[in-house]
Every structure is written in C-alpha cells, then in structure tokens.
Length: 93
Image 1: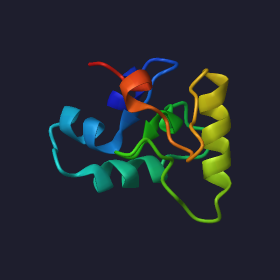
Image 2 (image 1 turned 60 degrees about the vertical axis):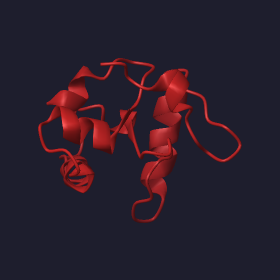
Image 3 (image 1 turned 180 degrees about the horizontal axis):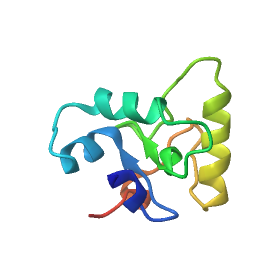
C-alpha cells in the first residue's frame, strides 16, 4: 500500500495517493479505503490530509483529534487555521 511509504514527519494528500495508485481524480476512493481500515491497522492513515493541508472531517470528530496528535508527535506543525504547510511537510516522491 502506497500510504505505508509516506515517511515519518511527512504528509501526503488524498489526491497524491490516488495519482500514485494509478487512479487520478479518485481521492474520495482513497479516503474510503483509509476510512475502512480495520481497527489497529499498522497503515499510517493519519499521514494523509486533504488538498488544503487540513484533516478531513469524519463522524464525531474523535478521529481528527487522534490524527492531529499523531502528526504532532512526528513534529508536523499546524497553523492557526489547523492546516499543515504542504510546501514544508508534503511527501516529495
């Protein structure tokens, strides 16, 4: 899985993953796959953000908190609007 290749301290966008997987313009499909990972999966799903560098909203919001905490543990910073600087933290493939 391509998401496993995202290095610690970097993020990728759903669109970037879709393009690398050979399904450009199918970022929603990438989101669906990540959303349906089994609990306890070792896939670093939290390293995938939307095209604005934001954590995508899901359900009750608990996943967003977990995702932000995991990213911050990897020294990824958020600005005042809750965005990751893609120019600084994006995975360079």
